[in-house]
Image 1 (cartoon, helix red, strand yellow):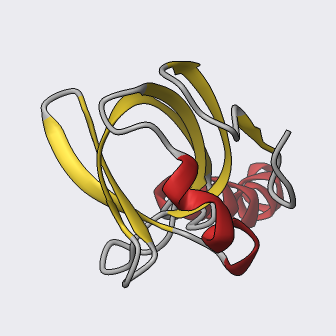
Image 2: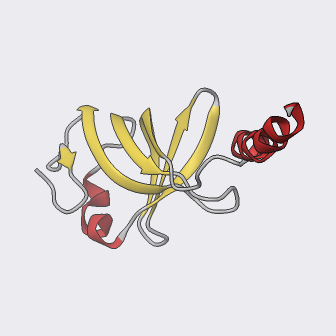
Image 3: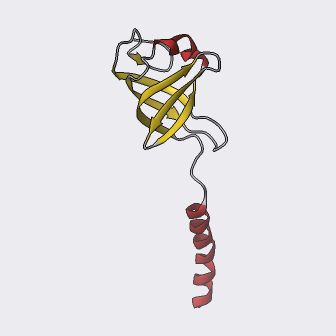
Length: 112
């Protein structure tokens, strides 16, 4: 009588193990508070640094006309969507916290 109970638990145990060892979702949102190091207007990307790492953020079409408004060396709170390891994070929004800009807040569609 104990054997049917154990055999019923095995699929549940296997499901728990599978879920535990799955890699995290690729499209994860993250926020980075960083100075703007460089704005590449030809490749449409922004170079930032955080926690000792320097990396590029890809700029979507809606933000392309506005990237030149970001203040170099200004502190900005960037929200990005993380991609697979071989792809750049994609910009979702930004809020300029220090520095002069005609686009202090980009909400994903327009500047405010």
